[in-house]
Image (cartoon, rainbow, N blue to C red; front, top):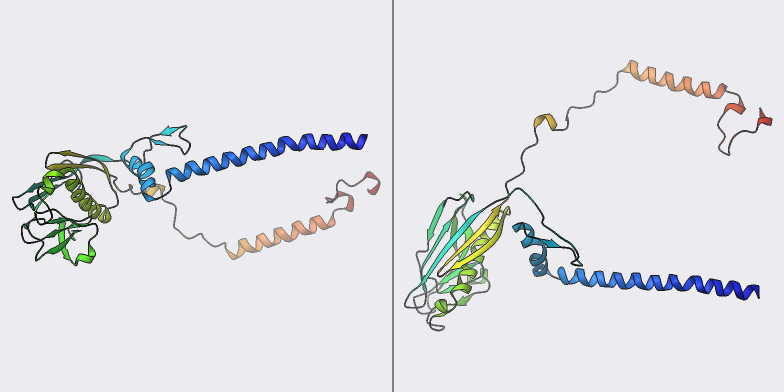
Length: 279
């Protein structure tokens, strides 16, 4: 009878533990699934963390129960780019003008007007052909000059990505009918070149007004140098003199001799205090 009671008690104690373990597993699976939804790929990470973090917007936890507004760095916000695109009668973008604030201080430092029509738009550049056709095409990639100015560098077509035609050889009114998309694609290519050259730039927002797109950005200035008074000392640690080393060795030897001269009952015992009978 006593054995049965013990067996029943052990079973009753094991049941809550099993149920608790199952609850922990379910919680772990739910947390993993929530984390996977918010960071499954680079696009999800950029949408949920990178873009709002750089723009000073709210970021929520994995389970969505809490949110916070990060402050990654001291930032200044201003219009980084203004891009004007005007298509011509052939469907090509006849006028493409880019105004850029290089140091994001509110003043335009560079104005660039493309000297050729844009017949195709790519994710990282443009294509220029004979107006209204897809003949004698030349490929250009957005690039940054050594002085920091935006420029176009002629490259092979294989160096461009995500290209599509916009002039009349592929359809009519393609730019006018999709002005917002064309401006975003051109602006995305320009911003990609700028951020590759200066990772401190973080795009905050883009606003489209007719044939113009204005892209605002936050510029994170470099960290301030540490004052000299707060810098750790780089001076070498002075070596002890020969006399100091001799005194140290003598003190160590004296300490060892003193411990050896003590009676057995006064020495520390690893197994506990020495019984009084041993004294």
